[in-house]
Length: 294
View 1 (cartoon, rainbow, N blue to C red):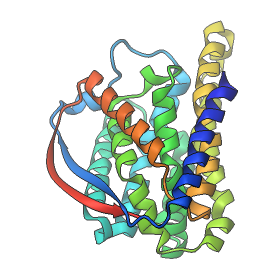
View 2: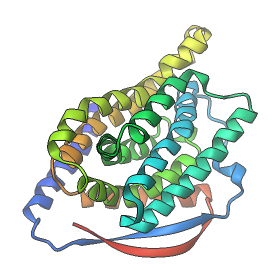
View 3: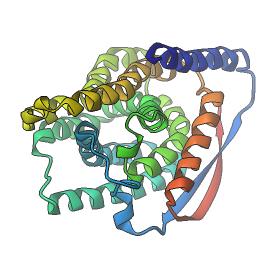
């Protein structure tokens, strides 16, 4: 089953890449970006849907996601700037949401001290080591971000443990991800993308596969509970597939000059908007702009 799902995802991406390359003479694909104002109560964005989810490994990933995402949000704002105006505004609103989530975590006694080293390195490399390095690292991450938003949400293994903030952020990430990569690729080159490829593979490894390790180190008593092994299996099915897919996406959409898979985009767009409706996340659309995706 795991092999089938992974093969299906890889097949969709690679087949659509071939089609996209064959149709490279197309002028452009219109991509509409919307600036949204959330009207749901702020507390609803950091709480879980329905009954509380009991997978402690997913909960640890969510903590890391909430703390690290605003660094990437600021980096995208910095390097894309006015090239895609609404995209930068979307990322600004994401950063505000994540700062609110971090404040809530800290007030609940969760400062995520164990991840300070990763937050420090991410901030240093993406924002403070020069534009050339920051741009290429953010390009890699943005080229693959759809995988670690979409796959865990789509599969039933850990879906219930992902808060509304993850879903809303993921919806807009899918919406503007290809435009982000398009804007950033103009500022870097394939050689530098290839050289820096392993750095982001390591980042994705830590982000997606290491939260259970941190959880077990903090709470070794979990190993005495049979349910923990089922939770661990569910986690690694979802995030293991995500990790492998980020590896492929980095190569296809960052190192190589291929277009985003339009077929996969349509599937993800439908899944996220359906989940938004199911969870009752409310927002107003303040502004729309159409951009050209080449």
